Length: 249
Image (cartoon, rainbow, N blue to C red; front, side):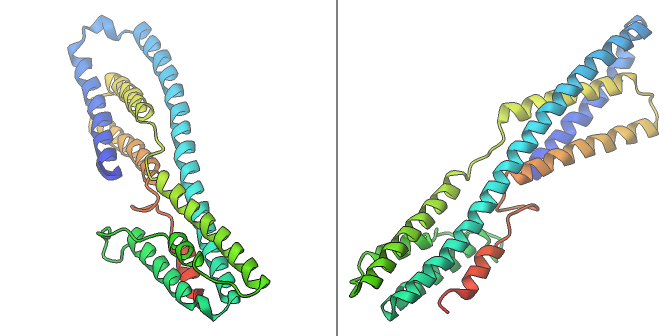
C-alpha cells in the first residue's frame, strides 16, 4: 500500500471516529454526558493525546533517521565512485575499458532507481563496485606504483559494493507497523471524544475535517520519508549524476 493510500485510509478512520462520536452523543442517555463525565473524558483524552504525541515523535525520528542515513550512504557511494575512477586513471590506459564499464554501471543504476519513464527497470543493473572489482583482479601491474593503485582500487571497489548492498538491505520499512496501528487507534479515540461533545453544525464538522486532514497529512509525510527513492519526498539523484558527469575524464 502506497503512502497516499495509507494516509487516505487513516483520514477516513480518524474522521469516521469523529462522526461516531457525534452519533454516540445522540444515542447515549443524558446522564452519561454530564459535567463530571466530561471532566473524566478530558482527563483520559489528555493522557491518550500525550502518549500519541510521544509515539508520533518516535515515528518521525525513525523515518527521518533512516532517510538521512540512506542519503549519506548515497553521497558516500558517489564519492567512492569518483575516487575509484581517478585511481584507475592514474593506473594507466589499461584501465580505460574498466572505466567505461564503471560509467555505464553508474548510468544504469541511476536509471534503475530514478527511471525517466516513471517505471522501475525490468532488469536490475550490477553495482559499479562489482563491475570494477571483477576486472581489477585481472590486471597485471608492471610496477610497484601500479600494484599500489590496484590494491587501492580494489579496496575502494569493495567499499562501494558494501555501501550498495547496505542500501539494498535497508530497502525495507523503518516504521514499526504496531507503532503505526497504535498511533492511529489512539488518534481515533481522540476524535471520538471530539465528536462526542461537538455541536452539530457546519463549523464543527469542517473543523473536524480539517483536523483529520492535518493529522493524516502529518502521517503521510512520515510514510513518505520511509520511501526515500520514490514519492514526493525522495533522495535526489544529484550526487550520482554529478559523479557520472566526471567519470572517464
